[in-house]
Every structure is written in structure tokens, then in C-alpha cells.
Length: 144
Image (tube, rainbow, N blue to C red; front, side, top):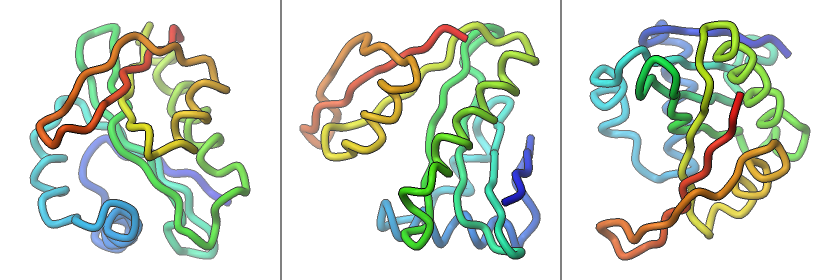
């Protein structure tokens, strides 16, 4: 497994892989690239196996010291192999090296595996709120 870092929209082949995984999980990737372009200091970590994108994790800067871990996913054929954990470790290592002190993320109760992964990796629940769709969102942060 190889891991690649991007600080901008990746080349077409990689982006197609990200969009496929995103579509499978979130059922809509139509606006993802447009949203990515508007993020400050975006960072994308991609897991590649046999020239194929099997997972991604992306986020962006909130401030000089705080980074928001925004979206991510693992191809269903590669789940439960520790890839999401490895992507998180790679992202946090990069963030530490670049001076960030805190990483924040948000999740929902229905994304239980993500919530558990975050808690197991040192995130603390900071707050909750109800989003525009009436779903409770959980705000988590980790000191790097």
C-alpha cells in the first residue's frame, strides 16, 4: 500500500478514484470538486494499491493551529484492514510537522465506525448540534 499527499486537486486518475469511493459512501459526488477548490490549504491523503485508489482522507485549514479533517472513505472491498487508521496517522503526522496543534472533525451517529475510530485515536467529543437536515452532528477534537 502506498500513500500519497496532495495539497491541491489531484490528477484525473486519482480524482476519479476518490469520486467513486465518495459516491459509494455518500451517494452524491456532484459538488465535491467545487467544494474542494474553495477550501483553504486543502490536504488530501490517498491510499493506493496496485495503481488503484482504495481510500482517501481530506481536510483543510481552519486557522494557523487548527485543521479540519473533513471527508474520507475506504473502498468497501478494503474495509476492516486498518487503512482508515493508517490514513488518520499519516494525516496527523503531516499536521504536526506543519505546526498544527488541533485537529477537528465532525460525524454523525449513523457513521458509528468513524465515531469509534476517532475516539480510539484520541479525539474528544466537544459538542453536538442539529444540522439543517435535523440530524445530530458530533464535533470532535484532538490535540496533536
